Length: 300
Image 1 (tube, rainbow, N blue to C red):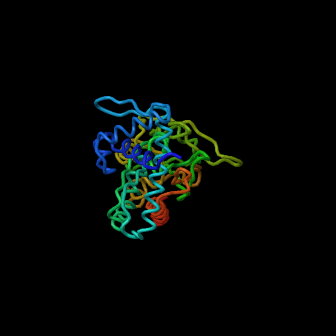
Image 2 (cartoon, rainbow, N blue to C red; image 1 turned 45 degrees about the vertical axis):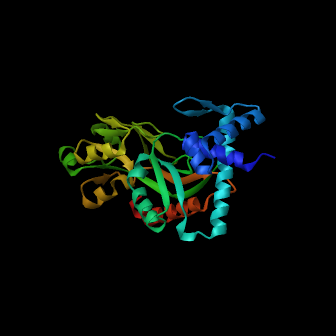
Image 3 (tube, rainbow, N blue to C red; image 1 turned 90 degrees about the vertical axis):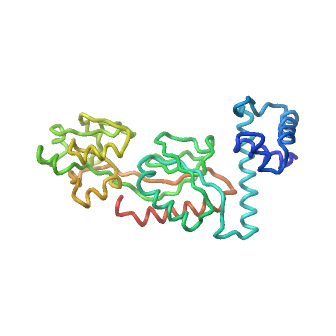
């Protein structure tokens, strides 16, 4: 049976990115770590790493070995946490990838509250609207909206987010508010390109099922904050998640229209890889996110 130390040394080598830093983590010399990796490759009969003077790159075999090494490291870490009764002094890093809207609006508050309770846990949050492979890229979890994740992941539904159509009072001084989706042909409809239905396809309720209406406007962006500001400046109408403009609607800086006709409503999920050894800190963080989203349900 393979020595567990081989997995742990390899895990730290990839996480740290250098032999010297990995050696510090495992309490060995740089030369010993290098010899252990060379011996490991010889025993396995495969090359795990491409070595250059600047960086280490995983081979296909190395990717597979690293995934198992990470599982073993997390299992050892969880065991140590449970056995030592760390409780409130949980430590380590949680890596998550989230869409831009979530990362800019609700999550900063949630993370601040979590960090107040668990100050020794570091949160690394990456904002990215692309569909990230959380296992391949080493994330602990992701926030996803809309499409249910692959069956290899576990999904925790946080809540549903409703979309709205709105514009600034200054815009409605120039054009009367639409009473029906048919009136949108006379309006400047600003497009949010980060939509699975397409930037210029807005979803409405139908008698039997929802339908899309193609709209047109003079501004398209994949950044929700930029779209919101364009609406606030009176440039046109936007079709966006309510949470993005909740405070603007409450203050009257934006006005909602076609409220009973908009059909778009998507689930927000915290997803994470299936594992028998999910770290306690990740469990706590996901539960905290759930409670935080629920406490802000009126904004969605």
